[in-house]
Image: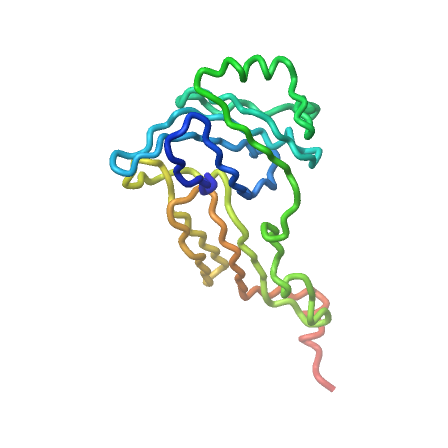
Length: 220
């Protein structure tokens, strides 16, 4: 699971105003539903969940600004199914909300959140491979190295339980090629690790029959 982003606590008010901006990585449209949790912040006894809502990133595929009210659901609500690829959001960037949504939002017993979202490209979130993997500096020499760039993992299984009771893992990746082993760094308490680590492994190609014949020919 991706690391959550949180607001700072806001003092007691019936209608809180945050005006905070967040940027979340969303490059996999098949697994891009944002869970939004509203907590009652408590420094001593821990936070109490007041409600939650979900943002289906597929609804933002037109790259336009979508601003709307999200009715909060009960804390035990599960993540909904994603919208179909052919779905088009009924909420325009000009704030013209559908009548059915407004009726539901106005009756929301747990309150609402107003969110403005947009799905765009952000260079800081790009994951380019290292330069040495993009060029073949010695195109006429015999290949002898395997280049591996470990980028990231997703949907990894949770095999541990942390001190708060949450299921998680500490992923470590090992590459083994014959007698050579390469280990990645350990990523603590995550099921969505980012490594961005580069490895070189010694690997020669098997000689071709022509090469074998040439190697047996006496030198002149």
